[in-house]
Image 1: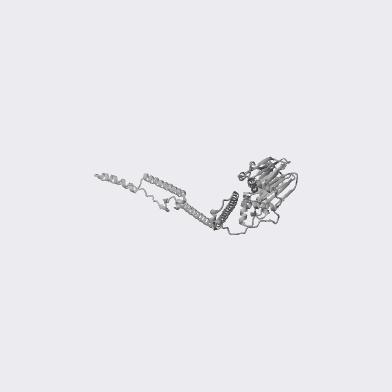
Image 2 (image 1 turned 45 degrees about the vertical axis):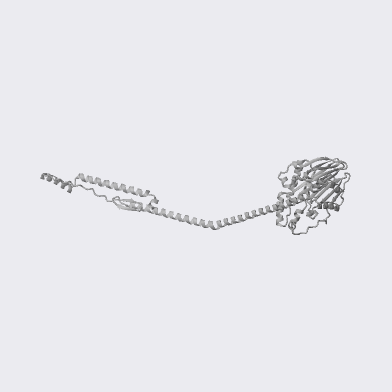
Length: 466
């Protein structure tokens, strides 16, 4: 089976080594695949190469098994050691892209004898089968249907199990003896769907210069979107010839001259109204360019915000550590010393108060013990001091009998001797009464002394201090 491989990078890439389209072929097993890495994602050319090589080494047409196989490749993609740009701004953008993963389309097929093919597809790459009676396209049969495609293979989506099996287009298509199979990426597929005759022009090309002129003419004519171009043409089932029509090593597109951009309507406002309508290809190209610039600016802005947030957090942590250090080194020891001195003063004052109270109690005990029972004293405590007062018990007064006047001298004479007797010589009965009163007085003094001594002992030291 003869095979032609057509590839050309877009002019903005300058060199062929920067092309993001990849292909894989296995003529012995009759397995073929192409993948188109998206410009906006990180290292999409690496991801596209992993997809094609995985498929030709192990072709699978069961959606669940194929999804598991590509998920394994996504894990390998993420584990690779990538070198980021030396430019900090560009390196930050690349890291943000890596977090979002790499994205690519995929189209693979395998011949079943010479009568049919199994095909599976994800994304906007397309298959064309050219028969003598017409051309069949799969999975899209119009440019509008191709542009409505929303499915791609993203590494992060695969690893997070967000990709479902329904994104795969799969079908078995019949072949005729003279059928020609063409696998093409999105830009070339869109051209063939709009202008079917161009596919026959491509099949006839045999060298790189003719292929380059074919693409440049369509780019300049705004018929072909300026993007990476990849196509596999499979024909002549009885041959094993493989032709790769790709740029030579020394080929590159000329770089544009750097100049200040001045919109035409600024330098010549009248040209704005005189400009002709843009074609759909031009509008699509402008839209893609604007979207790409917008996405990159948004990513740079998000990266800048993240860096500012991290910087503020670091500054806050440094300030917090400084304040804590100052507190524990300067403030805390001084407060501890002051608290310690205050506690020592309080303890000393308490001990002095206790000692004073104890001395006062000992003094009161001594006074109470040394006071003789015959001394008629009592201890009186008030709120200001402890005083001693000698309480002298007065002697009992003996009332003298009242002499009443009487008219008779006999009465005077009778009462006078009795009064003298009572005054000069107390009777035995009076002496016994006086002795009894004296004993009761002494007993009462003893009781009072004991009670007052006990009250001194039971008095609260705090109250005595007050």
